[in-house]
Image 1: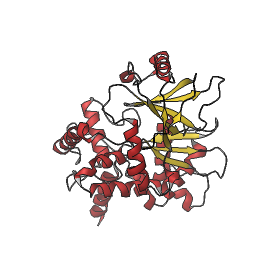
Image 2: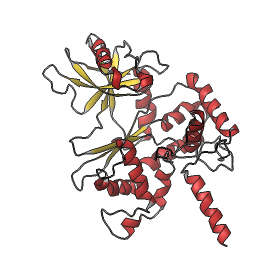
Image 3: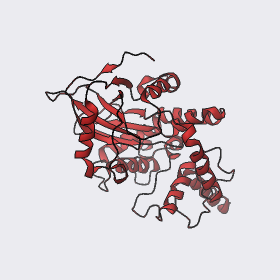
Image 4: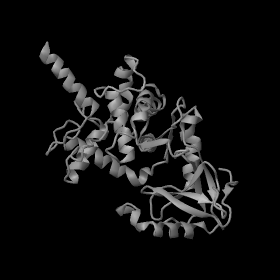
Length: 347
């Protein structure tokens, strides 16, 4: 790894953007208010996590992850930045304290680690107020090798059912059932009603591709109001059918499953990344979609958890829809089985 990292300018200020379990993201401003790094955000680690250092994460991204994606436009760009001597970490923690009440409850109280290195990540937020941006985790685009042969649910839907039972909740009770990630790749093989009919910009409410696009858009905006997403729904439905990003990710997941046990970290890296999709309000502008959060997973710390989760899903009947109480999912596998059963009943 080269030692020449970008250096943070002195006297910078930072605005809180968002956070996950192990990292926090800020927008860094120069003393006069302009962006310190136009087009990029500052990502820093939280204290007390089992994640690798940023130097290790960047080396893994450059040598292991990025080479798997020949087209660099499919990845969120990232690079290291030196925080040494900048005095920025205390400012970042002060910012977290200021926004404390707005943070997720289980994240409140967490602080930025006192480290010498941060990471600049490409800013995938909207470029203007009319752009629409969504992010989601594609998760398991292929079935888990640990699933039983007669599984009627994918790994992701099985886990969603398990989590609902564990929390004493009912899937879909709030009006939003979890989206099955298999739909994002298998719907490519399905004709889109409004495209077939040549109705540009119009969506048939019975079209599953458009319904999936709407579900993604609504989930990203945390709103039941569909009026603001209508202009984008057809474009996202078209992207679902035509994009090469998710099929590539699925092929990589399958390849990891076929690899050695030492590939387990890469396997889980490919299943815990985030897909960022940015759509401009300007007609004819292509959809900008990239994968980020492709961090190396700590196999030594996580392996027991991964194995225990697979055991619970299999033994609890979650892969086969036999759990008690039974949860209703919209899994592509379950849907396909029901369709086959209806066809056989009609023959």
